[in-house]
Every structure is written in structure tokens, then in C-alpha cells.
Length: 225
Length: 302
Image (cartoon, rainbow over all chains, first blue to last red; front, top):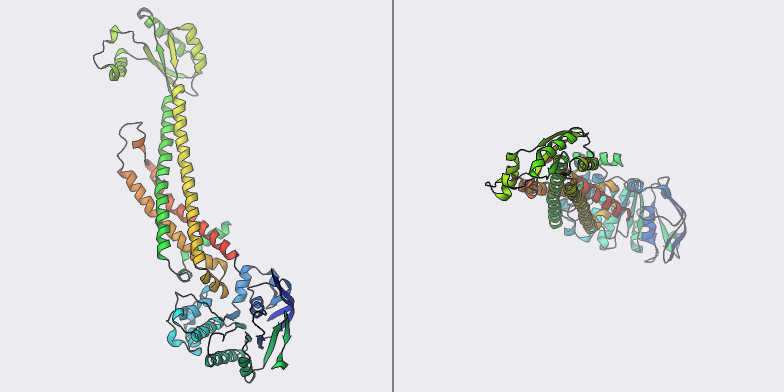
């Protein structure tokens, strides 16, 4: 799915990540943890091609990201679902239209997928908010809408950056539940979080591997918990 | 480049209301853009009319005056007839002269009437005899003719009109050039204004662009949402401005006196088609300006 080989990333100020190698296998479930500012978001951005590595090789779906044009990146993003902590929507469009946005921009017929859209919205528990505008939603509802938007193209990989950062414990459990269900359907999932109790809660439901970023390096941290 | 353009036109005519909807509607800047396009088109109509009218003027002056000259004979009364016929004889053997004709007494009186009134006793005055010369082909060699006349008819003076015609024709041509430069400047100004408006719209919608980019929208898809808007606005505004400009030109008092320059401002015959090209041209300018601005902005984002 996504392979990083000896990847480094430097800002103008200095090196943030270095010597990172990782292979995300299909159907795997990963947590990414580490202190704030350690580079979790940067690591995810490297995975969904928002940033390109300053050294080393990144391959997404077998393709080297160095040779990708902007349009190649856009097409690859349709196969990677991304959920942010502060998820952004088009505030003038309804939730249903926002969730269907990846279909719209890919030129797919949204009308033909209406059934899928409805099922997806009820899966995340937003069927009654379908016509609401994004600013009218609570934090948890926004996260679930973002998750629905991330999976409507049926992507192979779902990357979530602190998806539970803005919601209470109950809601974070519910989001985790949805992500675990997606993983059971065969999707590769990676969640960046500093919430260790979330990781513990997941461990009972899914065979999750925990990665930790510290001192610019990526380590397997399963034993720590 | 050309393929891009054709593909762009095709996508346009097909229309994509979904792509339009992804960018939030903006009332105020939209109206400003339409207004600017209308004002520019209005000015373009007049610049075009000015260019065409001064072009016509230059051509008319050039044509009419280039084909005729005048020879003036001042001689004592007794020699007038002899010198006139000698001059006509010289002209008959001058290459490039189609015909030459001495004006008769009535014609000369008619020419002088506006200045001296109808009761002028022409016989009592030493009025010079005028000979009208009509050219053919490339015209005659005026310096050569002048030399011959000086030798054979001492009282004859050739006035080939070039002296005062040339600066007039030059002025009219300049005016036409100025008109075209104005049209170019108007087009460039319109492109600049559309670019500024598009840049403002792009900057105001950075979040929209980021979201679209995140969910896998291609650059052309995002650009099209903006390009369609500004092209439509440019076209609608220019159509309105052109319409008003053309109506005002129609309402101008028609050219009664020939050679009157100001009242001659306007279009004649098929030239009325030319201002109709302004709206499509404005749409084209808007299309390219917005597209360039959008792709430039997008290129700076990840």
C-alpha cells in the first residue's frame, strides 16, 4: 500500500524525521503515537502526498512519489481517505453534498450513488443531518461526517490524524468502532493519536500495531503498552 | 495549448453545474466584475468607432485629393487665353494626366461666391484662370510638370494638394492608430481587472480549494469552477456595455455634412458587425486571465 524507505523530512529549521522505513500492508491497523510536535502529522502528510520527503523513497500503491505530477497526486488521493482533527468542509453545501464531494470531483454520477450515500450517512449516524450545513454540526458529528467523506470512494487506506482530538470519550469510542469496522472490511487503517486509552480500547477489538515517533525516528512500540 | 483551449471550450459548452456549486456564490465582487466588463466594453465600442471613422476619413481624403490637382494661371488679360491653351497643351502631353479642363466663368463665380457674395463683377477683377487636372494610374511627376510649366507658361502655378493633404491624411491615420492602441489597452486592462478579481476570489476561497484538493480534485476541475464564473461575468458585462454603446452611437445625429468628422463617428455597413465581436473577445480574455490566475494559485499549494 504505502512504503517508506529511509525517508527523511526537513523543514528549513532542521530535520524533523529521519531514517524512517515502514511498509503498510493491506488490511493492517496501525496507531501512530508520540509527543506533540514529534512529527505525527508530518508523517501522515508524507503518506497522503501533502508533503514530499526530502530524502529517501516513498511509494504509494507501488508508484514512486517523486515522479508524480499534481494530477497523479490528486488521483492517488481518491484511494486514500483522510480524516483530520479539525476537519474542513465546504460550508455552503449540505452534509450530504460534502460527503459526496469526492464522487463529484472525480466526475462520478452522484445520483447513481444516492443509495450508498444514504447507507453511509446512517452508518455514521448522520442520516437526519443530511441536509444540515457543516457549521450547524457538533464536533463529533463533524468528525463522523469527515469519516464518511473519507470512505465514500471506498479507498484502500484510511489515515486519521487525531480524529478524537475534539470529541468526548463516548464519541471517540464510537469513531474508533467505525474505524475498526472499516478495518474488518479489509481497509488499511492508520490513526495518529496521543490518546493512550484509545489505543488500549482498540487492542481488545483489533490486532493493532503501535508505532511511536520519538527523536525523529519511528519505532515499534507495542511492548510499551 | 490549442488542444487545451478546444477542450476548455468543449467543457464549457457542456456545462458542469456541480463544479460551479463547489465555490460559494459571491454577490458583490460578481457585480463589480460585471460592471468593469461592461464599462470596458462600452469604451471599446467608442474606440472601435473612432478607429473606423478616422480610417474612413483618411481614406477619403487620400483618395479624392490624390486624384485631382489645380493649376492657377495669373496673366495679364490679353495673354490669359493664350496661356490657358498653352497649359492645356502641356498637360495633354504629360503622362499620368487623364484629363484637364479649364473652369468656365460660371464655375469660377460659384467658387468665389461664398466669399464675395453673388453680385461680384468678376469681369472687373483680375481673377486667375483655374484648370482642373484629373490624374490616372500613378499620377504625374509634379516636379517635372512644374519645370515644364515654368519654361512654357510663366503665369501657371501647379497646386497638387499634396502640401496640405499629406498632414491631414497623416493626422487621420494617427487617430486610427490611437484608436487601435486604445482597444488593445482596454483589452489589457480588462485582463488585469479580471486577474485581480480572480485572485481575490481564489484567496477568499483557499479553504474550499484545500478541501477539494484533499478529496482528490484535479487542478483543472478546481480552476474550471472559477473560470466558468468569470468568463460568464465577463461575457454578460461586455454584452451589456456593447449594447449600450451601440445604441448611443445609433442615436448620434447622423452625418449630414460630408467631411464632418465628429458627426461621422459611428459604424457604416458591415462595420456594425465588428462591435458584436467585443463580448466574445471579453469572454476569451476573462477565460485566459482566470485560468492563468487559478493555475498559478493552485501550483503554489500542495
